[in-house]
Image: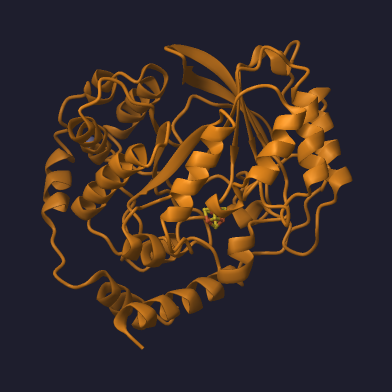
Length: 396
Ligand code: SF4
Ligand SMILES: [Zn+2]
């Protein structure tokens, strides 16, 4: 067995053992995992967005292989059963009639939100995760809200096919954007550091083309700083992946700085001292780097996870310290002195797309130098060797 295969084996064993520690929790299958509203950039202006997260049956990639290294969405999914069409439909109906709202909001109506995100903590286009009947029901219902300008859903790329998009298209007249996890266009990083289970980028290109055939938008998720990479390697990878995604035809990319959720591999590595969440300073270099390399005037680049949100509904998972079980316990960060201001800058950037909003912050006296030093760290080992060294020595 080669170095890469040995590292991958070790990785899979570790991630599967971590997943066995996820506490079995009972969720009400007729209640959403989360509903929040936030601000979003669309057609050159700031608009309101509503994000609906269905309580779902869970990602198939996770169930089969242990899933991706940075993801713990399954903490909020039903691990010991299934969710029926009726469950999904009653969850959705609670959005339409407003009964899901734990914090009341006056005249709640989907027509007040030009952007609707509809997520299922996995792939909305995977029929093994959510039956087509429920998907059709939801889109038929969305079709009545003519002020919605775009519906954003997420799916692993292999489930983007003409059949499922035609079914949506038959029931919904409006614009749909499908976010797919590319994470990295470097195969070793994607397969080993992210554990994405996505061998070939051809399938990504095909999905983008199919989405465009239907007049739909393609959004690529680019994970920033998976495990086993240095800060500078992660910056370079995010820039290259962002540029590659635009070249593959994506309409937008969302840079997703790794956050820590319980029972993920990155969280485990952080606990044993082999992982630090990405620095916020690095985000400036990534966005600038993508602009420099593409030489474009305006690009749809989002920085995932940083929107001014108001959570209106969402269970508080026991065993997750009173937080909603899908929220991270730690986000990417600088030091405590400058992180709050930096996060405000990111939120502003996400509703203006103006790079000056992201960069308009003084170098922090406490941590800027530390970040520069972190960027100088080099690791001459191959990525597989790093994984072997770290995971081979950890028996936690
Ligand atoms: S990132 Fe997506 S594909 Fe990966 S485990 Fe999470 S839900 Fe599944
Ligand atoms: Zn600082």
